[in-house]
Image 1 (tube, rainbow, N blue to C red):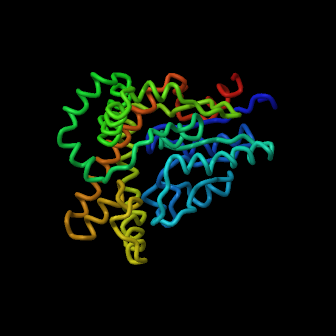
Image 2: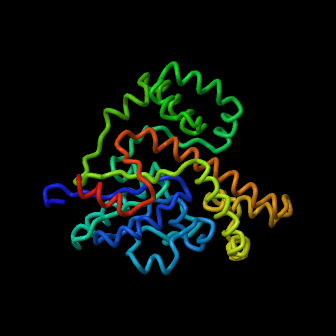
Length: 300
């Protein structure tokens, strides 16, 4: 790494793939500090259900942008980038290497490449819920007017498909074309690594981690947050793990069903994550090995 060209390490991948342990292991090879790129680990009190690095793990390597927001607060990818950019500079000033670790692809993109603002006002959640009922028709339309965006949104996320169509019909320009014309200059170069695990192994790890989370106190953690006055309708709690646990607390499902649903929904989320990361041709897919990442990074 030279003074003229500042490189950062990005370790991304599906949930439960082993990003945290690999990133901490990387400290054996470089003086690093970790910037968490996780849309849920930013919240206080939500520890078990978000699989935060333990206090012991955080003590081994400095961590940033973790466990600092009240669960009632709104936090976006754009806000994440705004908060993370000065931290990157501070880490470099200390003579260390920033290591961005997480599974929130949009957060990583916002930090490393900038985030295109389509200028469209946010719509109510119910609009997107309605879109889910007719998502195939909307997706087929998007394939005609903006095939690049359609390919990018192969997971058929209603929010993204609707906004891409809205942008096209409002401007006459495909969203993918506008995004390619947009670029924010960064004074660092990200080197992307993604943890590669076979699907069967990843799903086993997800199932096993779900059981461990439950027995380690996910139920008690959720009850504690609710008893502290936090609404179950909050976006921070309307996520995999907490959503199903709240259903159990409300008597809507059994304990066994709650655990099954958490594992199932986490597997679904992991699949969407992998779809996102595999679209990026700049990613180096690696085994869950800090040594392999260190070698490849040194070669860059």
